[in-house]
Image 1 (tube, rainbow, N blue to C red):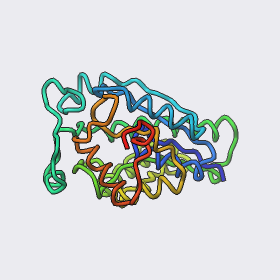
Image 2: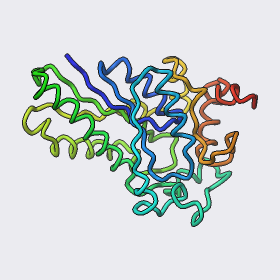
Image 3: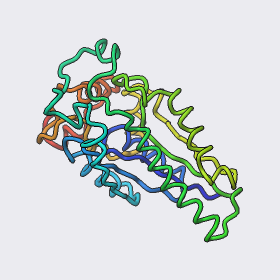
Image 4: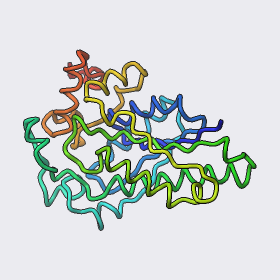
Amino acid sequence: MGAYGVILLSGGLDSATVAAYARARAETLTALTFYYGQTHSKEVECARKVAEVLAIPHRLLDISFFGGVVAWYSALTSPQLFPLPQDRPMAEMGSAIPITYVPLRNTLFLTLAAALLESQVLRAIESDGVPPGELEARLFIAANAVDYSGYPDCRPEYFLRMGEALKYGSKLWAQYRVPIQLATPVVHLSKAGIVRMGMELQAPLEHTWSCYQAGPMPCGRCDSCILRAKGFQEAGAADPLLLRLGAV
């Protein structure tokens, strides 16, 4: 059976882990990264490096209008308006959706990635003559609902409903009965569990970037840095990024 896959690769710890996971589950795999108007492009550079190390074909899609014109109500797209939260305790992170939430970001990402995936599979069916029953279409995303900052588009119930929408809105399902499967392999893992999974899969974690800032070193104070440090500490491992940068 031919399995086609698209992995949403942000350049962070979680998505690099899921990219390593997806390699064994899709014969034809594409890594897709978005430049959506975020405050820095460092994670884009990291995504490109992760894809290179994992030997996954990589595409970068410029949708910078999204953050600049549409989803501007976020500290990640409008830092001049909204300061980044810093030094927040874990209890506070889970109490409310923070200003780092980007409005409907995953909804747009999943829709665009699904369009790419559907195009690839439709070509296999309609141009290459592959029987639909021999094909699978898998969309991999590294969302996490355990050690996370409360984003509504990182929750299992969101992906359940989004998966239904993508299926019923596609020609792939309507005509050929091939569903677009949403794969969320780390959604129920703790950050420590993701660290362990990434190390077991030999994901290039040393080339990932989680910090909301773009300095030469991770700031260590934003929610993402705090969650990442917590994950490595609880996993009993040193962060390979910090080792590579000579910070530990």
